[in-house]
Amino acid sequence: MADFPMPRGTCPFGQHPGYAEAAAQGPLTKVSMAHGQIVWFVAGYAETRALFADSRLSVDRTNPGYPGSAGATAEQLANMAETQSFNQLDDPEHAAYRRLAIPSLTVRRVKELRPALQSAVDAIVDDLLVAGPVADLVPALAVPLPSIMLSLLYGIPAEDRPYFEQRVRQAATDRRFGGRALSELSSYLDRLLESKDGDGADLLSGLMSGRRADLVTQRRVLNLALQTLVAGNESTLSMLAMGLLSLLAHRNQWTALVADPSRVPAAVEELLRYLSVADSVPRVALSDVEIAGEVIRAGDGVLLATPAANRDPQTFADPNQLDITRSARHHVAFGYGIHQCVGQNLARATLEIAITTLVTRIPDLHLAVPAEEIQIDGGVGVHRTTRLPVTWTPQ
Image (cartoon, rainbow, N blue to C red; front, side, top):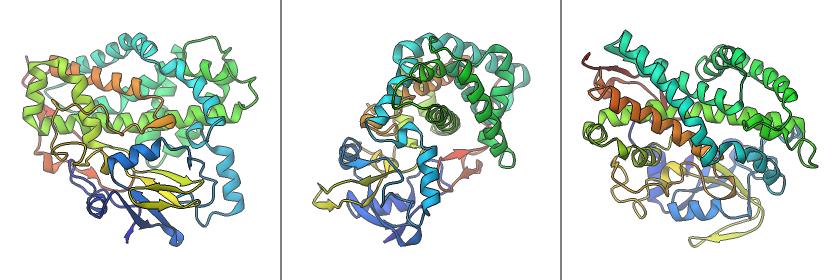
């Protein structure tokens, strides 16, 4: 029985070594966690998707058997209950908060944000071209762009954007002071929420529009805002850096996008599948669930291994190959079912705009060092690189 969590490994494009070994045993196997907790590890695509949509599995980490909560004290469980965001709540409470967030993240609303995102990316590329022809795309693009994206999503007043965006960047990249930056963001957002009247199109206004609903509290609204900030910041940063590394290292894929930028949306879906930068998604069974010849008993913990599911050869032909011509939109990088990532439309738009701008404005962009020299954080959690040196021929 393998131990979990499993280090991801330092190969930027390879499957988790431990995930691949678990998947070879079948779509469901078991792993051992801290405090001797044994949980189900789901690596099959069909099984992962089915369990994501199964209401008999709970996202509430205070439920007995939830992965990683074994050994938690009563005080710790109480703190978990107080600080959970909406994606850690079951219906009907989850639905009450999700309804508040959705209007600011619809396809239509994201389309309205695209011009501002495009302007931000154009400004970044302008600076690159002036300072080039050598750059590091992590600090130059992958770090600042998600903070700008979140500033637009949250409706941050223009005069506060430098303060907000600087702390968002620090929260994601500064190991020493990132915690303090997040604490300052929490205080700032709490004050800003109080000033919202609920009539705007931004996310914070949407959240505050429901503050008089029975299931909605100010603390939960703040938790939702913070959780969306952290998740959106880290995942978008990682996907930008790792996605560009993948395309530049697979030169034929980059060349295909230069020849036809209309392929970028399909390429983004394939990158989401191929990289699956976020790790496994935990659940706990509230009642018995029979699946793939196994019975998940009530109280059993479950880990939905989305990186393994997205490389299931039963669903994706040659899953370890990056192929931007593949139809990959049915991947589970954003989850599936009622808890599917609420910010996926905005994440897709941000990635599409960044990649399209680079392939059209700097078509001969290429890595400044061999891909194998770029260090990957091979630990547990979000898969990322902190350095992406590139170069190009000045026009």
